[in-house]
Length: 310
Image 1 (cartoon, rainbow, N blue to C red):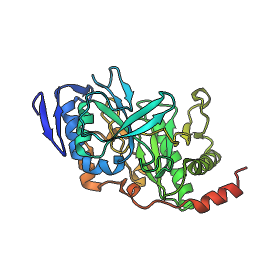
Image 2: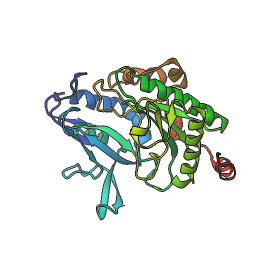
Image 3: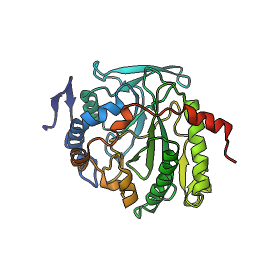
């Protein structure tokens, strides 16, 4: 790409400063990030389309100033689709960007929006999520990856519990240090419903693996255990979306995994902007089931309400 250029997707997108290095250690430039978005768009868009998008922008790369952005910025192209949501804090509508096409993903990359966080629900019914998400966050972080290995152990306990409940589960790296497990959800359930299930499972996990798992919210009280965050799944909150890059030195992305990989000792740094295209060619979209029919949790809700953990 030239220094400034217009790329044609569904709409023309003007891109600039293409030689700017966004991930210095990996040497990944804005041009390479834009190309990643173009290549990955067919896989990414089903997981982002019609969802409110929160992004973290790093205009001068991952080590410089960053900021969250929900409202579409001034000067954005008119063709970018948005959805208004009233903010009690701001006393105004926030015009959330909808990543509904390749052109929008390219525009976001040109804006150095390097972390994408889609909502759990679709804009057609923001009170009813399409999934249940569990965020496994290692308290101990570092290059030895011991914290991530513990998160994998907790995830395998979680899979066994979800299997027993008849719930399908799909893991992915956060792209940073953690691991996330998603359950596709049938239509009609509220965030209050999913909170009942996720809280029950979180408390069960602590009973099953108390030596490595905790629901303690205060970091100082977690020791070296993995924080089983069921509170993150709530209206208005988000997790990193599938295939989004993260602001880490390796240019890692949030990568859907096979459970066999977790058992084998996978590490998040294996999955980067430069390796995901080959992975998709080999394995396809491991998160594709998340866009299909979801699990009905009616019987599980009934059981939990009548059989609380002791």
